[in-house]
Amino acid sequence: MRNGSRTGVRSPGTARSSRPSSSRARGSHALTGVALAIVTVAAAALFLLLLCASSVEALVPLPDPHEPNDTLATATPLENGVADYGALTTRTDKDYFYLVLPAAGQVSVHFVQNQYGRDIEVALQPQGSSNVVPLNWDREVNPDGSSDLEGTAGPGRLFVILTLEGGAEPSTAAYIITVTFTGGGTGGFSDVPVGSPFYAPITAL
Image (tube, rainbow, N blue to C red; front, top):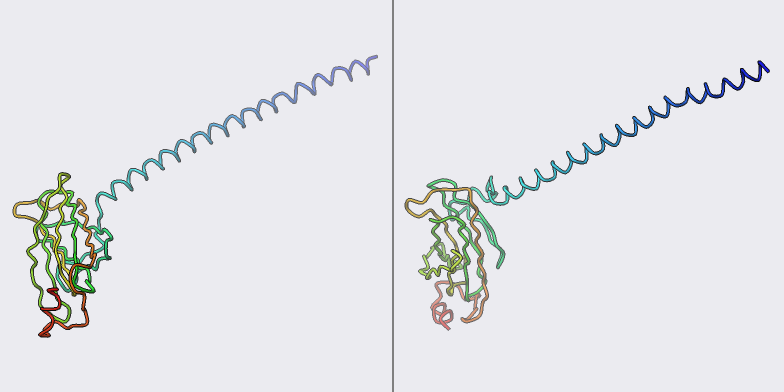
């Protein structure tokens, strides 16, 4: 009986010795859950921070990848109908863009300045010529503050020049420029060289 009693006493003792191990396991799981929660919250906060930072950078496009483009020789080429951007960051900053016009035709320029005091000019370098001729196109200001210029030009390079108006402050705010050549309207005989006696009559059609 004594041996049986001793055996009966050991079982509860063995059961009691396993309880601390179970408690430690539960505690370990709890700590793991807390750690995962902290990591999840930190990751979410980092994502929001990066999202906000990327939004700010979209409004402040520095450094301007087009610089230097402050002369006719370093002008930034445009794609027909595709918007591009820049920023006038100093008082002496000038930005030059150009679109190649394959023939004479209708051209429109859409300008979103996003900052008051930005001036826009257009000029044409006729195909086969080194001269750059200013184009006196009317600038129509829209209710949203953007501007449109339209006219007939080509063939050659149509330059768009952006500068600060007198007294305007430089800024990192991005302007947007879009030049679209739709063609039509006038003769497109691009094989007639500039300077030919037939050039003026043909392009005037």
